[in-house]
Length: 293
Ligand SMILES: [Zn+2]
Image (cartoon, rainbow, N blue to C red; front, top):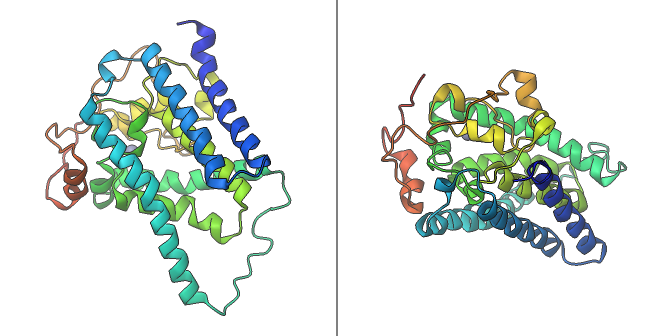
């Protein structure tokens, strides 16, 4: 695989996704359409690249895994956050009806959209960093987050595998605060496109390189260590889109000259089906024990 392809794939696919989103948005297509079409195009490109330039062929997913991960993607990443948002907005309306919430000046709406999006990403990633870190260090939260760490291989669709409780907490931190302070739909749209394509890359099975971007973006080279079966390795690289908070708080990790070994949970019998994983956090000792060096 040529060096230029290895380093160029991520910026190129992200640039295509963002440009396509802008094209649709500027031409007054419906916002959901202007978000999801570029994300789907990004996903298709990543699927093709995984087949052409795999990081590890043994990480290619089988049919059953694709079906299960597809269920998580559709229900937990697609339907669930929307239902949650509608419910929370409805509850807030009941509570605050008649009380004007003055959010004027809380968000720099006069800034250019890309700068607003970057600000949102830095702040949202700060919230998500601590949620993710507590999910690894505090057992009650780990029970739910363990679902995301259950696969023994990484490929793009793994990004959707979250327990709804875990996903709900994420939405409370990376979506609601920004809706409340009045972030515009053009900023949210751009954020979702970058968030989704970056998430696919973070979990992808493409033999690519990030180089110096490993000090800015939370990409696959870093995130594979986050999925290591060894706790001392996986308790690093918590960044969602950016890796800057790991650098600030000392959890950035990228060993030189070796690859990550086994991925997943110590309990190799942890269930893998959709419904079994929804139930797993409520059963005792589903994954209480994690392996140490
Ligand atoms: Zn994690």
